[in-house]
Every structure is written in structure tokens, then in C-alpha cells.
Image (cartoon, rainbow, N blue to C red; front, side, top):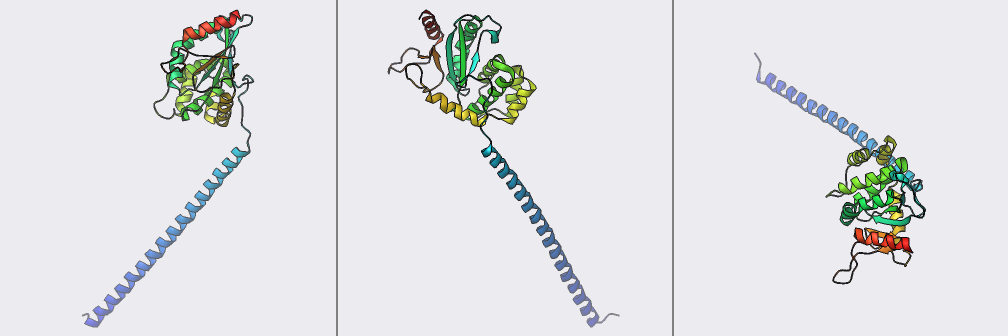
Length: 264
């Protein structure tokens, strides 16, 4: 028969065993926590190094310019690009557009096809000089369009540009997949799609935009917005509004300027 002293001794041993288990559990938790902290610190340090290396490499790398552009950084579209026959002395038309510009989208819908017809006939060459100053989509789309031009030429660039305007987003930009899908729809090559993923022209778009806004037309007028159209180096304007400010030129305004340039 157990005595009171025996019961007291058992309770004391049980209490000691309980406290020892708690100490062991606490030690185990501390070791696990320490191990987790070491792993997390190592991951953060590695990620920080990777980011720093990427930034350093980006800072050291020169800005890449798309190959095949005009001296002014534009895409020259000619009759041969559209399957037409080149004529002598086509009138030079320059179009400044931002892919995020709603007025540029309207301009493409109303006048773009007419310009294509004029190019195919050999009457004009059009130099498209995209700029990017309105949104993230401006830069993303301009860079993607340059990938398509560099790899696949002016015709595919033109087809892609039309799709970019037609799919102007309501938000800030499109996803990489959407840019690639539209390029594929335009007939872009796998090399162009890979270029879109790599985004090699993201810095160039900013430099080119500054350059475009700094270059005057033949009358000394500098670019103030988009779309802007030069015919034979001179800005073409639409009718003035009630306050005397010129509007975006319409199809008839541009065709009239082209005819005047031919006659001069």
C-alpha cells in the first residue's frame, strides 16, 4: 500500500519530468527557429546579390538601338514593303504616334489605311516615329514594336502597330503574353517574340522620345503632342478650333499637303 510520502514522491517526480519535457520542447523550438532564420537570411542575401548584380549589369550595359531604323530613329515604310512598285521621288511623310494615345488610335482608324494605299501606289514613303510619354503601355508597346521591326521588317511592324492601337488597354499596359499574342497575329517570327520577352529597348524608347520632341520641323516648330504629321518636313494641321488652336489633321488635310508637295 502506498503511503502519503510515496504519493508525494511520485507527484514530485512527475512534476520534474513535466518541467524537463517543457525545457526540451522549448530548446527544440529555439533550434528550429534559429535554423529558419539562417535559411531566410541566406535567401534574402542571395536575392539581394542577384538584384544588385542585375542592376549593376544594366547600368554598365549600353542602351541598345534597334537595327535598320532611319537616322532619326524611325521605321521607313515604302511601296516595296507593301508589295507595290516604287515611284520616283515619293513625298516624305513623317508620322509621330504614341501607342497609348487615343487620338492616334482614331487617326489610324480614319487615315492609316489611306496612307497605306498612298505608300503602296508609290506616291509617298511614310516614316513612322513612335514616341512613348503617356503611360507604361507607351513604353512597352514601343519596345515590342521595335522587336518586331528589327526581326521582321517594316510590313510586319505596320501590321503589329495597327493591332496595338486596336487593343489599347484601359489600364496601364498589356501583359507580356498579350504583346506576344498580338505580335504572333501580325505574323512576327519566334525571334521577335523572344525579343519582346527580353525587352532590350526599354531604355532606348525614352532616349528616342526625348530626341523626337527636340527635333523641329522645317519651319522650326517642335513636336508638342501626338499624332503629329509632317509632309515634306512641314507640320500639317487640321482646322483651328474656336480658340485658334489647330486640330489633328484629317485625311483630306494630309492628302492636300501631299499634292502640294508634289507640285512644288
